[in-house]
Amino acid sequence: MKKHLYLFASVLVGFSACQGNHPTNEDDRIMIDRVHVEGGYISGIQTTDAEINIFKGIPYAAAPVNDLRWKAPVPVTTWNGVKKCDAFAASPIQTSPEPFYMWSEEFLIPKEPIDEDCLFLNVWTGAKKTNEKRPVLVWIHGGGFVSGSGSVPIYDGEAMARKGVVFVSINYRLGIFGFLAHPDLTAESPQKASGNYGLMDQIAALKWVQDNISAFGGDPEKITIAGQSAGSASVVYLIASPRAKGLLHQAIAQSGAGLLKRDPDTDAVALISLKQAEQTGLQVTEALHASSIQELRAISANDLLSKVRFHAQPIIDGYVLPENAPKIYAENQENEVRLITGWNEDDGIVLGEFDHADAFKEKIMLQWGDRGQELLNYYPAANDEIARISQLKLQRDIVFGAQNYVLANTMSDQGKEVYVYRFARRIPPGKYQDYGAFHTAEVPYAYDNLAYLDRPFETADHHLAEVMSDYWVHFITNGNPNGDGLPEWSPYKTNTREIMYLGDQQKEVILSDTLSLNFLSRNLMDQ
Image (cartoon, rainbow, N blue to C red; front, side):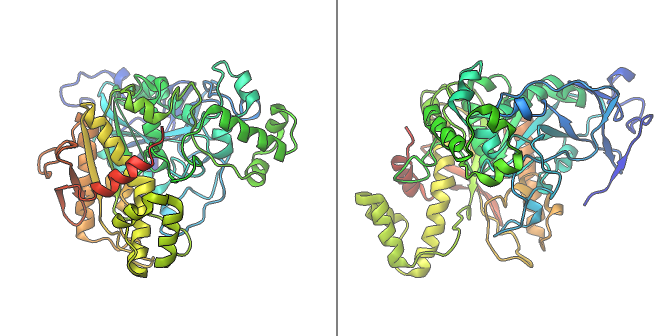
């Protein structure tokens, strides 16, 4: 892990009195021990070479506890003196992190602290003056809306800050704390909506960034939002939300979009209406033997987490999402952004045992009916090994590939600039099982954070991380990933289907599996 040097009350950022052609103006200097933000003054830490300033655990909204549980975020309470922001604050309430499948501890939150008081963000910046107007990236973590935080090791922002980006990672409420809807919560809300508290937290963080990022040398007029998995779906919903208008200018959506059903038969994981979500809230109240929201708010966070099985997801609440997201996109009502989107070769996750070939075919015919045979043409099951591969590809394409494919097609057809990738580099497994280019594998490459993973990386890995993070930086800076020395990456067009292949080589290719993606897109459309 990279070591940092703590700076104390009277220490200024180590930089010369004159930077380039900037006039000497002490008021413009970023003083690491005294930066003014909403709420008061904060202090941070510096890297040992004094190049990057780091502020961890900055509160961007009041603690969402007690009477503020299940309410829209409100501004922070002011504090006296200088608040030390030198360590990550609490991750949102969730189960204790334990490595599983392909996700070793570098992909997980720290063991502690974990708390309901969790609305914090972190900033990495290489700016020496407040007027540098560096481009800003706001990172939204994944975790299925039930886990994760901005303090996951592979989300570290130092490498991107060294490349000129002001990097911000955020926390937001998860699980039942972030997505519970209930008729009484709707009634007490000024917006007459409930359930999307996690998304409202993200919007509050974006507002904080717009209002405060210039104090860190960032440009509030050049904000890119990025996320992976549930964080990517969040990006897609924020682009769709009128509440986020003017708060974002570009977007990166990695392996997730939430524009299609993820089950061929039910709406179980598609966006549901406020009324449907409120019914779930009533069931939660009944299961906990609570007679009011006040009684629910009196239940401890740990008891809520342990006693209720709750499927957390954004909903069509009429406020954050006034319509179903696919409808907003289909009618070209989303916020205007440029976009990078894509997915991983081995994004598919099959938990448990694989079905044998005959069982897989039987399940497909049962689930898909008269469409089953066509699906099996794309995902065959001639024998058990072929069926195993098909199950991985089908899971990849239903949950991720087709989602991002529909997003890219929709926005490209609207004339927006879209860049599509397929990440295909197998992470060297080392002491771990080989899961190939697995779900989340692209994150440490895109943000140049291979140093945080305990894997036997090769020259090809470091080269890919350099190329991929350069693409991301160019896009964050200019709205176009291309730059000197990088393989040309053309905007995606639905008639040419050119995408960037990010694997052992980096090159443009024609998206090859459009027939299967088109089939899924048609049959899983969430209208």
